[in-house]
Amino acid sequence: MGFAQNDKKAYNKHKKDITNQFIEQLELIYPGFKSNISIVDTATPLTFERYTYNAKGAFMSFAQTDKNAQLASIFRDPFAGLSNVHIGSNWRGHYGGLECAAENGKVVVDRIMKIDGK
Image 1 (spheres, rainbow, N blue to C red):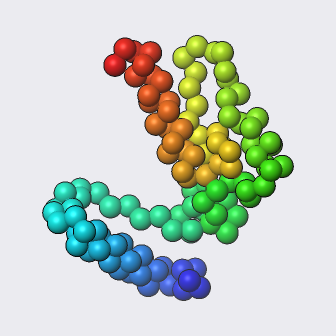
Image 2 (cartoon, rainbow, N blue to C red):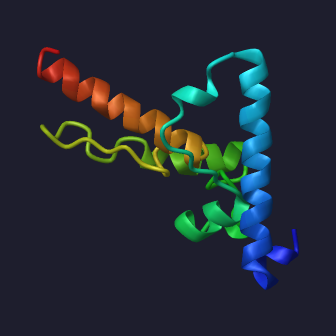
């Protein structure tokens, strides 16, 4: 998508068109889906690069190798044992990345809810 750096208007239109096509496909499978959408946010490799600084828009922080899995393990729970310190992070999973951030955010919320008895 070379036009992204050169033509932001065309890039945003393309991104919106792809998003709308995706929503239309979901609407075919799940009638009424579209009417229940309140906010739409579409991420692309450029989004990942902008927000995470991951090289070339990679959605994962580390390449999937055994060596990197061992290195990444140091980020998993650096504050284990400290009360009321909970980390949900891009860097807190096997290889890091957006999926890890979302999963770790849920884990943190679940832990806090359990502590609060909810």
